[in-house]
Length: 99
Image (cartoon, rainbow, N blue to C red; front, side, top):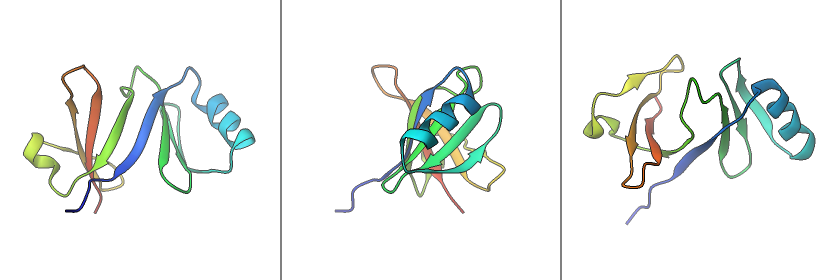
């Protein structure tokens, strides 16, 4: 049986740029993307998203071949498709598929 993989974990931060710089100073990681509402940092074993809570909920993302089984996914500018679901305790999970 093949297990699912976690693509990224997203945490809410107050200032995207300031937090990105802090992570770069303290850890060996690289910036894959950054704007005013979120940044994506790559570590060797997974990605960390720094998100503005007004734009994106704190969540973790699971790679999915069929995010549409959870509802209508949103297509993003990088071609990925995702949909958020919520577990019984109110945690947001993004089901994501890359092209």
